Length: 456
Image 1 (cartoon, rainbow, N blue to C red):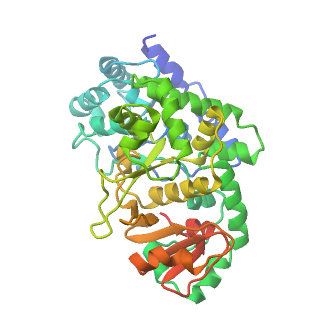
Image 2 (image 1 turned 60 degrees about the vertical axis):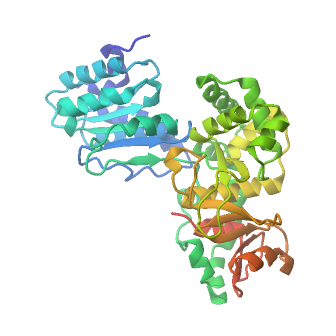
Image 3 (image 1 turned 90 degrees about the vertical axis):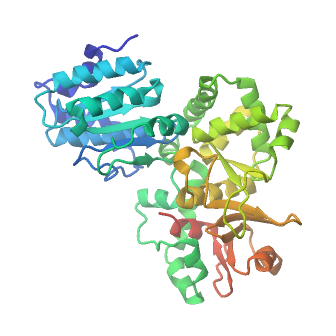
């Protein structure tokens, strides 16, 4: 079905001057406002200029909620016909999008400035051509744009064709599953120190008192975070004690749909996800993975790449100890972007994931989301965070800005647990279950404390 202007008006009921815009503002975000767990969407957009924002992230992460939250605030401030919301499920061509934008421009010609929100823009082939044209040749050059999508590849490739058209402070916004620190902020657990890994290396035993102030609440909330993961909808469902069946079904359909959208095979996806789940957090090479799954090497890589650019799988690469550069040739590790996704896959495929691998997955994604670079290209080309192994096969779970981090989630830490860091790096961080010891060059912190105090 082709979207015409009457359909657009249906999605923008606040255009009717006889309606109560505050009622529509409430309906836009009623589910968000009634939730017990809310991600903070304030301040992500600068509405003051002619900025153009690209909002990226996996499906169901909250991109549409961010757009609607912003629209609701505009309606509350008195804006009406200056606000356009376009869900793009029924548009497939750039010329259709261009036509609708020009019709809207004619409709809103008396407005001093317009605020244009387009959801899932990557559904439209060559969408940047339509946006570029109206930004270059119409009054929309002075308007605000916010465009969302779930494919890092499609969005980045297209947005790079808009040079000089993002306004003074327009930018890319990346919404990913919540880190534990972000989760705590949403739960109003405030007053936590904010550290970089290198800051932890400078800590002394006296700093332990500050870290232990909120230890009990951090342990409780970390247990909840492990159970729910970082998708706001999953956190809400867990908090209410609701069944996750609907979420599992929804996210499984997302996994299948993403692959089929690229013309790839559902059967091969299942083979690859089975391989990933059974080797979660373990090193592998593309050739060995292809051999075990009986899938061509380039094909295996293609599936992992697609899931990475859609923010569902995370590929961690070996990092050189001296140059801090990641290697394409050495063995890789693969993780799921969030606990929810690993649960979906394991439930659908009848697999049982190892708890230590789940905890390493949580540690890795938290550190990558907090400290990794190049994330706007997807989760398959991360820089600044990697892992390391020696010629003898000794391994360090993470290198963050050349600070080695090892997960030892056990009741006690023995000297042998520090040996790889001590021999190859001299200094570093061990993440434990309970132990807190800041006395040596290798700092030992409980995992829940480390994740609570590190990040942006």
